[in-house]
Image 1 (cartoon, rainbow, N blue to C red):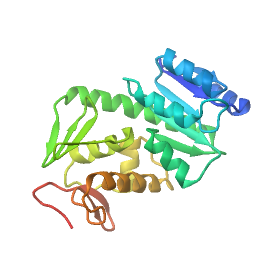
Image 2 (image 1 turned 180 degrees about the vertical axis):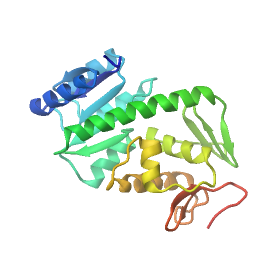
Image 3 (image 1 turned 45 degrees about the horizontal axis):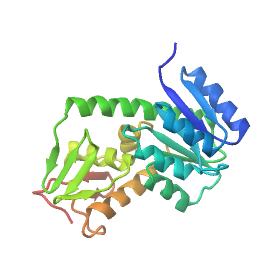
Image 4 (image 1 turned 90 degrees about the vertical axis):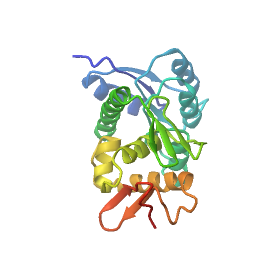
Length: 239
């Protein structure tokens, strides 16, 4: 039975692309493949996609540019970047431009499929949640709008990537509740994989750099040593 979900793969490695198409179609997804960045850009602009899988190193337009263009569209699309570039710099750059996830080659095709499935499931859940709670969420000087996915701090707009927004919104909806990194992976990213807790650390550090006057002494997202992280209520403060 088909899922009704359409996935665009932009990948110049024919072998990887064929494997991905095979496994994703087995899951019931409709899959379209572009072998270079120029074709990927054309399809991105013409289609209505539910998820994108983008290689960084592509003939023509590269994956980072495609990611940036996708985030300029009015509709939010989950994006996973794959690349032989496994350095921290490239991973963070991809996340900064709006990617939801990053896998370095060589990777397990089954893991990538699982992450796509988790991203789609999480996106649907967040959309339903946003519709159910269409009003703004305000805690102290911080205001989040789940419909427009915008954040303001003391009246100043804060530019967040999609995953940073998801993480902050999740925290803000559960003030003072402590979450472990594995719990955050499961609840925000939609999967629970040992060894990927560093992804949570990276996003929290980036959120702090954007929200806190002093990221080394945060007052919004604070560390509870030995347990995890929590969003501190404005009146309680933190050190």
